[in-house]
Image (cartoon, rainbow, N blue to C red; front, top):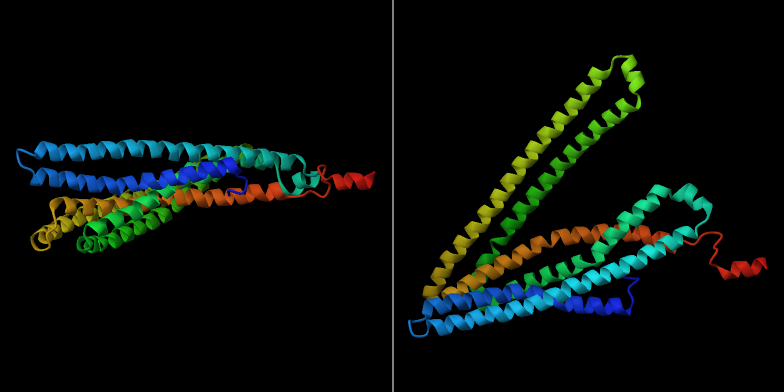
Length: 330
């Protein structure tokens, strides 16, 4: 999808990639500073509490300044390069369409399809090669950084927390599959209802002449009621799924704090380390789940890019831009 990127785009993508990775690592670093702040409160006395807390506060400020800079570079660079490349693809696509012969429009392409690809597919490509790339890199860096921080802080508690991730993934995946199945049934019902309306309105004279209005209304209501029941099931499944995921999350918090308390007594862990490990693992796990929309955008963008690039690379039988053909005629 990046085949039409020039040197400026490559530079923007490089800076955006580095900024996205740094931005992703900032979240796990925040958990480290948060743990230090808890230790500052817990181990401080009346004489040095302000000094220790001020140190943690300054670390938060420094992290905030750095995150602001890299966030700006990440979003700006990837948005600019995505717009630049999408504009280039639009221009090349229009140029390729205009130099095709008449048979191309009679057999392979229609006017509506050309307009749809110019307005729709180019947006999908821009979304897939723009800000979504930076967001995906940021989330991957957060995932890796979270687990690195957790295992550096305390590998025993990190291993226990890892056991809580598969139930979350399984619950989320099962709910997503059920919702996808139910949603497809609902969309099919709405589509059938729309077909009933289209056929009835399209042949309204025939329907009226045979007094078929009541039958058409009855068929439409049956399909709408079916879609309604499907929507109710979708809501119940979604609610059950969200409840299950949050139940596992809060149970994981309880397990981590309980086992962390035992490690404080037996292995010399501190309260700040336990909290850092807890939030680092959860931050990393949640970032991996948040990367799903980016993967969907990449798949849609790749499919749209294939359609656009196929037309861009298509060479007509009579190419007005081919100078060798013109010389042969001369």
